[in-house]
Amino acid sequence: MEVICDNYMPSKKSHLILNRSCCTLSKEGEMKKMKKLNLLLGTLIATAALSHAVDSYSEVVGYQKLVSSQGFTTVSMPLVKPAIVTGTVSSKSGSSITLSASIPAGTDATKPYYLEVTSGTLAGERADVTVTAGSAVVVIAASSYNTSALSTLASGDSVLVRAHVTLADLDASCSPGLVGDDVNGDRVLFFVNGAFVPYMKASDGSWNEDGGLDDMSNLPMRPGIGMLIHRRAATATTLTQTGVVRANKFARPVAKGFSFFAPAYPVDLSPDAMGAKPTFGWSNGDRILPFVNGAFVNNILDTSDTTGGSYGTWYEDGGLDPLNATTLVNSQKSAMVYNNNSGAGSVETSPVAQ
Image (cartoon, rainbow, N blue to C red; front, side):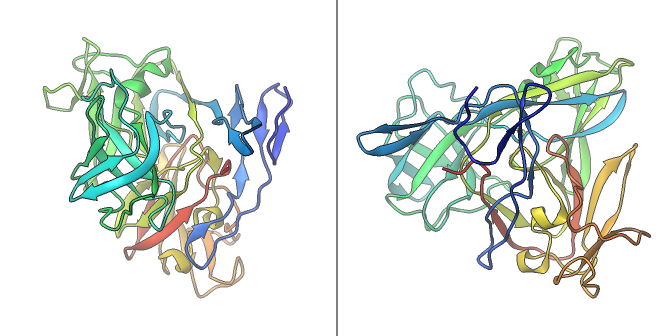
């Protein structure tokens, strides 16, 4: 297969490995390139065609696999669903946004959706929206996961709308399937308001919050936020996520306290590549905690030590080796992070930005 795209290398496994892009962070808060691209892609499409003197590109699609053995495994879902609509903002009134294109007829409005801004001063910001099939109007939904109120969204700004990846999508991606049982079903745990909230697969295939009765199969897997699979069955399951590598920017605010960090792109991340430095709101004593052999491992930022970099040095708790450029978060997994302060954070740029 011919690949028309920089920094793509064929692997020895007849897949493709995206590799060796360096990461630099601008003072304006944008991640210009990712540190290390290391995603196995089953199908990579990155062709360019000249049509009416305008370059057009197809989306980069592929898959990544993660084995979840009995016990707990952190998970990220960086591959996204194709946009159901792309266009520009025609107008905005309060929480209602009128787009230049309509939501396709037949769209299931009961599913969860979100809008991503792809140009303008708000590029990279996201907000949950409600949609109506056949209508060009989407409505911003109140959500603590929105990165912006989009109050300054301007006419002419480019946007897209995607369906969220859901708990049902995660379940369908596992083989053998996650086990449904009304007492000991497999579980997925989300970190909400400082605590892990478990959702268990029932014998009828539905998903319920522990102690709840409502079917939560449409619960969104929020972009950039991790989760845990609790595999109770003795046999391992393989999660094969397929989807699109988002080509647009991704806003990453810094929240005070603990949060569950997951890659926005299928990229292995070091502290440097995460933008885990004071320029982007990180401070002395902040932590990155990957889940290793059944436990979260503490890695701490020491801003008084410049061994690893001018902004400070990341060390494993009790360790001596600088970890600034060492992968701490694999593309298929997630990690807890702790920040002493909240901040604007960074705006990450896609490794396949066009």
